[in-house]
Image 1 (cartoon, helix red, strand yellow):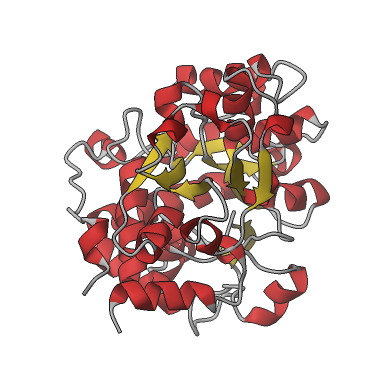
Image 2 (cartoon, one colour):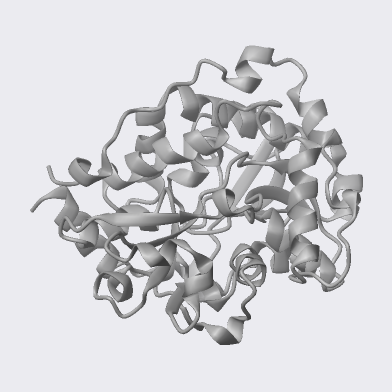
Amino acid sequence: MSTRDSLTSSIARHPLGRRGFLKGSAAVAGSGLLLSGCGSDDDSGLTPVKLTLAYVVSAQFAGFLVAKDKGFYKDEGLNVTIQPGGTDVNAFQLLVAGGTDIGINTYDNLLAVRDSGANIVSVSQMFERSAQRLVYFADHPELADPANWKGKTISIFDGWQPTFAATVAKAGLSIDDIKVVKQTFDMNNFVNENVDLANAMIFNEYAQAIAGSNGRELALFDYGEYGTSLLEHCIAVTPEWAKKNKDTLVKFLRASMKGQMFARDNPEEAVAVVMKNGPALPEKYQTWQMNETNKLIWPSSGGVYSVAESSLAQTRDILHEFEVIKNPASADSVDFSFRDEAAKGFSDAELKGADFAPMEIDPYTYFDD
C-alpha cells in the first residue's frame, strides 16, 4: 500500500472524527490520549498545569509534546497534562468554565468568544502566518473569485468560521447565498465533488485532498490574498488565572518556546515524539504537517510566540468591519507581558529562527511512495 493510500485509509477509519476531533468529553477520559506526567519519574512536588489543545494530538502541537517528552516542563517545576481538543472539547469554553488552565485555539475565535461576554486573553500568538485555505479543483477557475460562490456548496469546519464569514461579507454576499455544510472529518465530500469548495488547513486537509484526488490538480483560495486572513493559533488563559499563577505561566511559556525551537531544529525527532503520543495517522503525514507548521511559525519576525500589533489589529478590524463581531475588539484581548518575560535568556537568533529552512516536500509526489 502506498503512503497516499495509507493516508486516505487511516483518515477514513480515524476514530476521533473530523480533523481528528474527539466525539465528546467522555472520549478524552477514556481514549488514553490525556497526556500527563513525564514518564515514570516521581512528579510529586511539581506544579500541576492542564493544557487543552485546539485539536487532536498531531504535529501542529509538536512544540508542547516535545516540551513534555524532553522534560522541559519538568525542568521548570511543572507537571503538564495535555488534553486533546475536539468537537465537544472546546479549549476556550473550558477556560471560561474553569475546566482547564491554558487553552489553544485561534485568535479570531478568541475575539468572538470575548464578543459574547467571556473574559479570556491571548498570552502568546503561536502562528504568525495563516494556514486557513479553501480547496477546489483547478478546472473550475471561476471559484477563485468569492463573488462566484453564490449558489455553490462549501464545507466549513463546524459550519462557520470567522475568516469565511468575513470573506463572504466582503464579496457582497450573505451566508444565505451559499449552501454551507459542516465539513466531515475526511475530505470525501470534496474529492467526490459533493461540495464545490472545502475548508483546508495547509498542514492538514490539503494533504488529505491531494491523497484522494487521484492526481487531479487542485487549487487553493488564500484568504490572505483576498485581504481577509486572520490570526490563528494562540495560547489563552483567563486574566484571573494568570494573575494568580504568573510564575507558572511564565515557566510554561518558556518551556514551550524551547520545545518549539527543538521542533524547528529537529523536525524528524519531533515527529517521532508526536507518533509516540498520537500515532493514529501515518508518519509521512505527520512529517508533512510538521514542516508546514514550522513554516507558519518560522522565521518569526518578532520572536516566537509574538506578533506585531498591526497583525493583531488587522484581525480585530476585519472581524468588526464585516460584522463577524458586534463590538470593536479591544487591545486588551492580548497580554504578551508573560511571553516577554519567558523570552528572557534566549538569544535573538533562537527566538527568531532567521536561518530556518523548511524541508522541500512536493505533496503531489511525497505520498506516492
